[in-house]
Length: 218
Image (tube, rainbow, N blue to C red; front, side, top):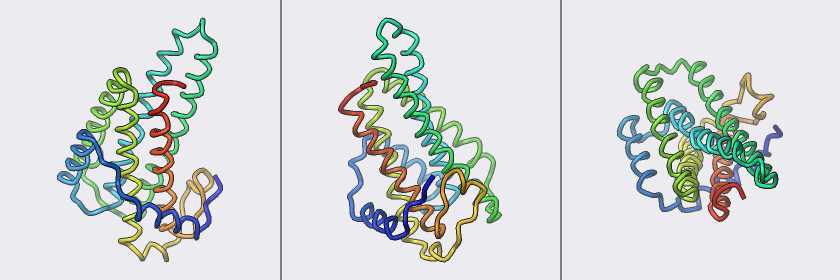
């Protein structure tokens, strides 16, 4: 993956910080408030890890529904092809979120950050399990609502990452060293890494908003 230039990433950060957050729906607000209650309001690497565990879930849910749909589209090759393209896109988004999680996991280990098993291992899986089924059910009932929920989540993540960089100017002087550079990208600093992750979240948000207009696999 080719890294975005430092000056461009700073410009994208300012663009996010100057943009208002989406008017989040009830489910998204409950999720964000719940996370603040359990993990605290401050933005931390460990809290971002929890976000990334959850972030993969809608794409997994949509992929599952799409695979089911593909088994019933043999007589409509055009529709089947659109479903397959949708699956590939969902897989790419899911993989992107996975790289975020792997990098954050690597960083917390290198920094020796201690995390409780219950709060940072077990509970995130329960939240992800619940969020998966909510995303899946919403998609079956009304795909636009599932996309809208994901857009809320990605918008929140975008702003949180960009705010984290603003709150921690020391990240500008921290070099980015990772075993996943070749897979995700090389950056001038950890600040630029987080700006790029925030930019990824914005792109995911925009993809979900675009899909709202086309409902299912168009």
